[in-house]
Image (cartoon, rainbow, N blue to C red):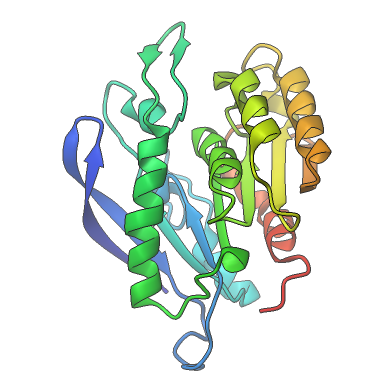
Length: 256
């Protein structure tokens, strides 16, 4: 079951209403004493339903979780849909410039502060969660994948596990590696990260940056699952097909 409602969000253009989504597992009402891990996700409009998705195709996550009876609560927030690509600003923790789109100041840390203080606070107060770090996950794709990497390493005291599908490492590969190098990473940290083989040419040096970033992550002792998806593309349809791998990684060795 997915609940959808509207929340006030302090976006880069001022406060605006955003759609929020909350998935509760199939046995949530049948087992009133049970508590669940929580997965926080970016680009909420693309997570559950095709009718809400930006390009008409979602991850189909509700169907996947229901069919597999995954014991997981999922909370997701709609991204900024502004015509001036404000999403890139809200979903980057670093200033960067994209040749065709312009310069972005990078308000990603503001976004993370809202996720931690407001969204997590709300979900933990309203749902039967396991609110501790061990059972708090985060995931996203593209710029949302970049944010998931940032969250895992900058806020490792909050998130223990993350999934970054087709993450936009190209935004700031050196700064990301520097973050990993200095981060206080707990030894149980888990990361799933992938790229599709068909999207490697979308940005300069993607294969090299992906490999070198993965090497840096492994060097810090993170339990890393790193994949090149055969035939994978930069699309929700492709990311949907990776859900079995994502969930296996997020739940591996976890007692719930």
